[in-house]
Length: 231
Ligand code: BV8
Image (cartoon, rainbow, N blue to C red):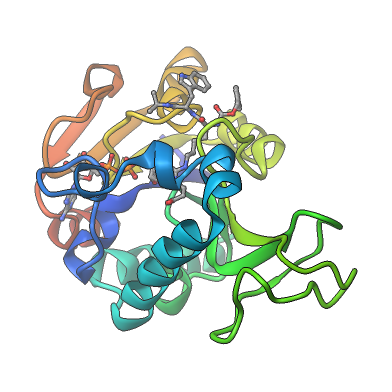
């Protein structure tokens, strides 16, 4: 089969070997922190300082982490396909920047990015800065106390959904890497690919919640399975 467009969806598992915690594995982020107290708009309204501290901790961890062989392999896949006039659409649920730091040029962060903040008063989005606190006035509208992490919380609309759906329909291969298939709408993409007759592949450490939806699965560490897939 001639594969022109590859759609790759990544989750926290691809960054696990870089030392960043996953969410639902044993000892994962959500087993240590309550997502309803940290990753919802209501949580931010209730305690913006607690939420900012949580994301500052995640940001520091991400800055101290290095991309691993799986991130690098996807960057090589992107450039290799482009050299042949073909395309990789890389959609990540992750909010870290390890794909970019591994060399990927086009990364779609459907759950937003740790490296960005957004003003709730005027909507202005901008890079996060070390000295930024909850009280920092927005440089665009001047309102203080309304800057939030520019990530997508539970109950919020993920970003770039139209571009994602468009790329998914056009893809010739759907690959999910390091995701538990627990969070929607991302977890539903494999079912959509199947419905469109698109071949599907899961590269995961263990069977995901939606494992039954994949035509093929390769279990193992992403740092081994992704380079093997790309080779
Ligand atoms: C929304 C961002 C309205 C900030 C996160 C049906 C349809 C639509 C919505 C819903 C629905 N049912 C329920 C909902 C609501 C909800 C939802 O899905 N809840 C779940 C818990 C049931 N969804 C939402 O609220 C979403 N918004 O629905 O808006 C809408 C409606 C229709 C259509 C569109 C929109 C917003 C969800 C985003 C929430 N934000 N985080 C932050 O990071 O703090 S959630 C969080 O989960 C992260 O973003 C994370 O990326 C995401 C998914 O987790 P995974 O990446 O999969 O990580 P996990 O730990 O779970 O799994 C890791 C996997 O890796 C494991 O399988 C493990 O085996 C594997 N692994 C580990 N190590 C390795 C490895 N694999 C390979 N190698 C290794 N070394």
